[in-house]
Image (tube, rainbow, N blue to C red):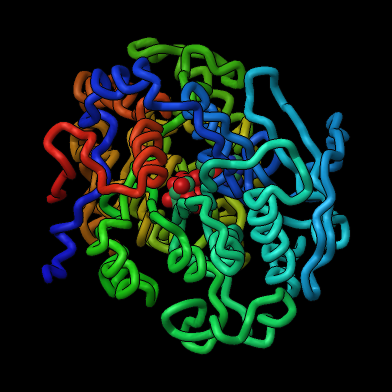
Length: 520
Ligand code: ADP
Ligand code: GLC
């Protein structure tokens, strides 16, 4: 048995897939339009806390040609407040302390996927984020809230509620959807379930006393199933009971089989890998991240239209009261303010960055202590540092477009979308070489990578960025490379399409040129 992470075979990426063969199969009628139920706690356009929302909204559209993908998401207050035209189409029973719920149908756009809203006001009609109170504390009944989601998905897969639609495959995302395959397995439901890990660090851990409340039998509370160091783990349930597991980049797929990144689940993930059940599929970006057509930019631009790009810089300067100074490169942070994102490291290099002649613009929300430290920094350097504590998708776009560099010193990063959005908008990411950052940034070509998440390594990368900024030809060449770098979902979604086919056929992947790819 080879336990070396370097031997991880991940799903071939889009470029490796033999599409001619796929097309032939399609025309021969071997590939039917599959019905896929996406189970997700976020969906950009309805509710977004981070990149999962973007993926949950963009991937179904990219898969739509060959699949009828429908979305199941809780009807949080933020969604209900829009008063979208919805139609109640089903009622689903409760279980133990999980209340009954309704399913409403919503179609946001004519050509968009159909959305099933899980209506259960006592669980979801509250102020706050999908996961926490307005003060940032996790909801105490999160086990019931997200068990409700998993149970509804399992019920729909089973044909309960008579929606007139039953999925051929269920695709669940992150711990809030983790009980989906568990409830399916407990009912001997044969529909295959794919589980995607967007972030292993969020596990949905609860006291074992939560089990009877959500109708889980005590027998599944063991280390082979749902128990994780004395707690009930929704994430582990997702990993154990699903038919296949993906994560959102190839490098992260390898990393999570090691103790350093595995958050205590590396043994299980290594085992899944050895069974050929763990794949890394790097996220893409959606078409809205095309800077020449983005209606939210102050000025749209293409490669080499740097003056138009600058109009966005002027806007950011005005918004954040920064000095107007084209000699001073503008470094941006657009991020959850969390230890994962290395915000403390950015605080640690800020003096150096400012004294070297740079400016810093931050947009983010999260950890209060780090937020306060950022605000203090802005007070110390009023013209050089601007901080906006909050979540604003439009201003985030303008910041990507208006900045020269994006700082992303993440300690770990399952994929990361911000670095790709920045690249697309001609802002060069400076990032720690981990997870999806390692897969999407080519050092010195379309961004900068450093190899240790510490101040010395980070500072050295920033110094290289200043050097490039001082050489406009080089800077513009890198910008052009960056703007052409990110893969759009229409390419990136193809490995999912293949995985669906594989899971349905329940046979090993053999549809690719050269077979399974062996990673570095
Ligand atoms: P994660 O999901 O771990 O937060 P990603 O890079 O995958 O990281 O995705 C983050 C997404 O959230 C990006 O679309 C980014 O633009 C967005 N984002 C993060 N913070 C903010 C903010 N304060 N305002 C607006 N958008 C934000
Ligand atoms: C998670 C990860 C991030 C990833 C996103 C979308 O929030 O932290 O790296 O890009 O999910 O998959």
